[in-house]
Image (cartoon, rainbow, N blue to C red):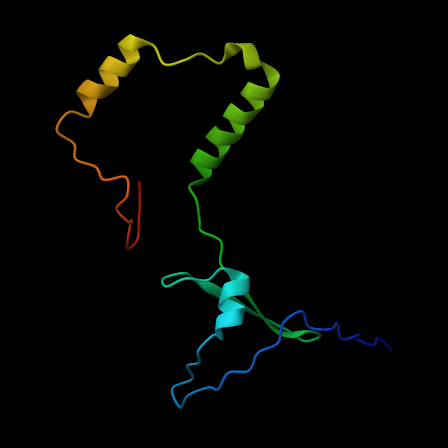
Amino acid sequence: MTLAMERPSVLQQESTVTRKGQTTIPKPIRDALDLHEGDSITFNLDAANGVQIKKTQAQTDPVIQHFLAFLARSIIKEPDMIQGLTPELASSLERLLEGVEANDDEEITGPVSL
């Protein structure tokens, strides 16, 4: 016979379910999970622990992840190979981006795909 030991809660809040099955995540829980408007959450129903809610991690392109891992390994393996941006490459990038408007402070909204 296996007994499931209940772990003490770090934070416990109550919320009411509406007729449509909706509820509000209490602010202390949102703050603890760093949840903001538009974020996704995952519900996990576990027989021993009940329901767990966690912030869904953003899905990233696996090719980019592999490329970034390759870069990280290369930097660790051969740090002397890191070079600054040459004036020629900087000039080439400026030409490629000519006429492209960008606002670094503008929030990106909606689904994003590259």
